[in-house]
Image (cartoon, rainbow, N blue to C red; front, side, top):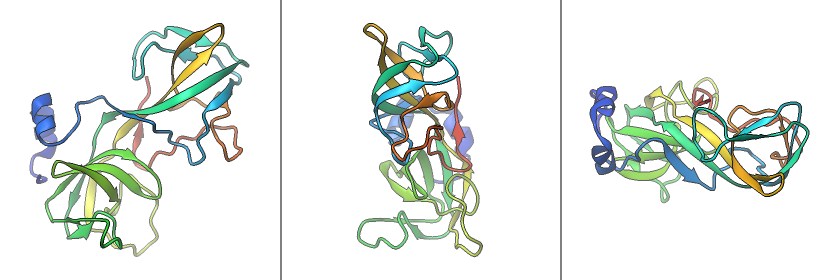
Length: 211
């Protein structure tokens, strides 16, 4: 896949064409993902504000119900909903994971890399030429970690992915639902490293979607 007209083509192609390129239909759900360095499911607590609860992950519009402020509840699973793919273009030959000769492949000038999800340590889940693989950031500016001056770059990022973090919860007398944790800081418990404030791991330059 090449860079020419990439934005225009993404706007025009249908779901069948996206699948033909190995790209998921959006919004795209990635199960089992928790974007915290020390993510911990289990017993959480709402703090100063009530937490809206929805019937399905990724749902927009009116909430179904809510978890009251200063209440305990159980988080039993976690997913990421991708609203928009990030896009990066290769300008010079580079490996998907520089330095990993046996566990990575070469990217060629002109290749388009579609970014699905930011993992950690400057690495993304991406689709390259129809194949899903891990790709380390190779661009100068854009989504990813801040890079020291003098770091070599091999391409450019046109935009970052847009992701939401959703958690399935059990609360009250047998109630269940989904909460959007993307921008929710009124929760204690998810961070196993000991911090109370929830700071999802999102690459600098990527976008956290909100409802």
